[in-house]
Image (tube, rainbow, N blue to C red; front, side, top):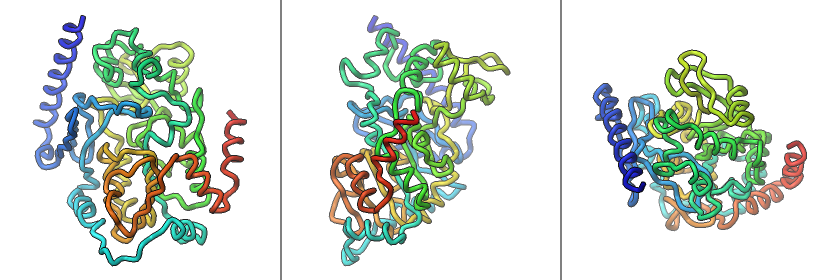
Length: 375
């Protein structure tokens, strides 16, 4: 059985490499635009054609113990053909003089109170959703992968593979029923804080690496969100790309326990979650350059800052922008003694609740209670 699984995995990866090679050969921009980002183990990569990001099916890294997130996508963003400018932003933006005035948490809070920050850019990772109770992938016994073991997957990540879904959609349908936004899991206090920032007119954009959709459930305006790895609010055919009614897709998966089929070509339909080999939503490349150039505060929460290109967003902002990290540990370029960075160690919910109280917003706990009552 183990040999059969390994055979299937290797055959699948070979087929995908051929497909990706064909894509490369058809793109005159591929050689100049492709950017390889290497991690220690396993090796992760992706291919970008023009302004599009393609997740390679060889990207097999889900962090042990991490909350639900889709395949890792590693690329340097090209925005309107301006990847060189983004590169310049990344290399120059944090070249801050050690003599710059040091920013404190009190300074950031006071500036928020006084309305000095009007374009807050949020980068959110799996940590903002952990308290919602969303299970991780790999924890023995309770992880989602263990619960899918009965479907005899050739390898756990096959659940996010387009070719495997085409052959056997049942594992993903089972997972989708488990995590469909607003059905079983509710927004956390952190998601409520995002919603308050939005309603106060202070939110520039949220870039989230999660696919749980809890920002939208909490009431954040979809225009203020970039769901980098897709969402469940729309659906399309995996073959011809024809849009499918999201409500019909939801009904088919949640009520019937089956994947919907396309009215156009008869192939399978799935929610618009980024699978291996699929293109990253264009919304990222459409907005990221404007957002990093115009924001006046970056808040990073619940992330390891290891998954590119999202991990690089805090480094692309202008050199005079203040950066706040709310996390259990120091990550990314926040390491080191940088005068414009503030690290607030601890749980996302606790810190956001504190911030809401200090800022004299309506009680974030009251906001959370209202959400629980409505759902």
